[in-house]
Length: 287
Image (cartoon, rainbow, N blue to C red; front, top):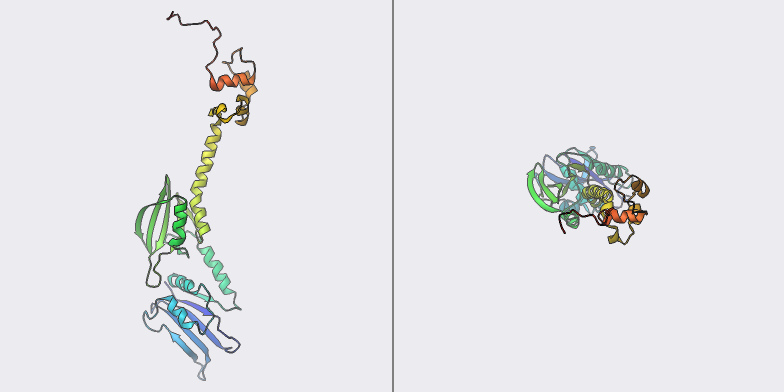
């Protein structure tokens, strides 16, 4: 973990033109903090009109910090989540949420892209169990194994021959629910995940691959399906399966002289034993 600093948009900025509001995570003190600064005094020192988080582990719940500064600052809906993410970051971060700043939009784009990178211990996403479990259940995945890994735990799900491995962080005092870590691994392939749609896509890949394989197998064996079961003539069945009936007839050594038409030949090919040249032929072993 590392320090983080988030600058907020002050309320009534026209009345407090020098006001600056910062919140974030102090890694040394292991606490969230907030500073409200109204310019400087005569000695050039910051004039802090409000501050919290100056003692060890004074504020470990981001919701407490949000409540403490809401009378001074405009509070984005995702501020608590942003504080959580900044807390677990391995590098120091600075985010400017003021209206005139573009750095926040750039930061959001960066976080989205970084989630798609393959890292052994993963990145914390915004997905909880309420987001992930319905996707797994709908697609028929069953939990098979759970094991501890660095920074959290890994869960292995199976569906037939397919295997999906999902990593989760451990909950802490500021968050009681686990969060999914990106990337996830499905049948040995790694997929960056930062949304429910991305998770669905990753889990569907093995299904798509298997379906393509099955379709190819079915297409290759369609000639084995009895045409009568589909309500087709033998010639229609052969045509649907790409069989060149004229070529097949002209090159068949077993074609009887009695099979004059394509349909005659295909009826014999699919349904009947080859006709005898001599109907009176017998083995001589019986009467």
